[in-house]
Length: 193
Image (cartoon, rainbow, N blue to C red):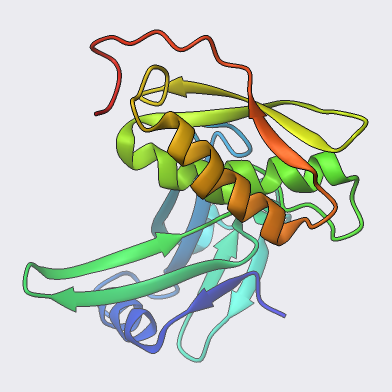
């Protein structure tokens, strides 16, 4: 089973790009700062002499994708697409696990909740310059969160907590009792309104 899913349009785009490169050149997909909030994914050419013995090779019809062993767990479920719209064409790489390794379905509840916060909820809050951190999972299964960035002091934080975050978490984890905010909200120029 492949780590990375490549759309037909991305496959055709890679084939076209590689036709102008030195013989044997392939594609490399990687993550810089994997498992951190500053993780960034990248795609580059991979000349034959830069392939390492420890690289993972994913063969396609016309080329191979190479992934270094450190990046591999963070590229699980990644999708590469080549999208054309009114603004032009662009290669997209979506890697939901780049900032945090995927956790097993039987992992402790706190790890599964934190994974959802990091990979789904914080990606939604990032559009407003904010994020949320898991502080604690209480004995009675309440998730204690702290808002940061543009969420700290935002006039919509209560709505975001109850109608957004809490509903998402309770739908995914019915065993949770609720979500509470620990943040001492200070309104200011950093807040999103």
